[in-house]
Length: 281
Image 1 (cartoon, rainbow, N blue to C red):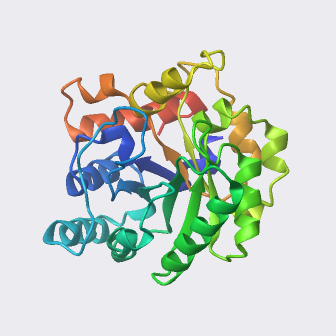
Image 2: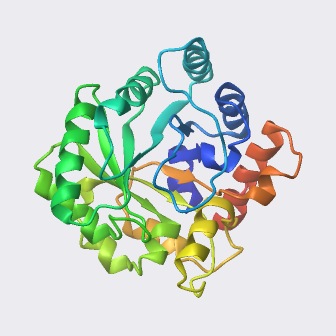
């Protein structure tokens, strides 16, 4: 399977959040990744627990331009620009600098994460407005469904996207969120493949207790390397559209604290992918 996804692999910034963007891009390229995701905006209000990382690339700053230059020189593309938490009280105009930065870096899209909405109608309204703003920058609105939050399944993600009528809305499928939502291969295949823009992979245990606080800590601080759990990763990838980016996103506080250099961290990520999918470089 690695042969079919190698050219689509993306290293997600969440795997190396301690590393500033330019160094992260260099390390990813050295390890053989042709795509990355980047933490453009720090999630903040409305989250139920601690997150890692305090980096930000919002606004047209010298740091952003250094990152853009590094990506161009290393031939690395930006798959997604992470991530905007959208609560019922959010002023979506405040997200314009985030979208501007994503556009400067050549991102495929920006990610709204909906937290606290009490109705699908409210989500549809906010997603429609978010998508309209993103379209102004030539970006897709990439809905990441998360079992703990307002858009909690792949089926719901498709439903709210269709209700907006927006042409630039798509779905990201993360193996952790798909598993915790109770998702199946059939759920993926039931979605119009044209609506699925990318996926992200990490591992864990399907039997992890259904206790929201535990889920939060797992997804933000303690994801597992591939093969260290029993997620149906290969089945998930096999059910997804061919050609979409496959992001390696292992948010692990333990990994961040090993004292490794950025090149060492990126090479461990690539080696993990190669070992799991049964092929060496």
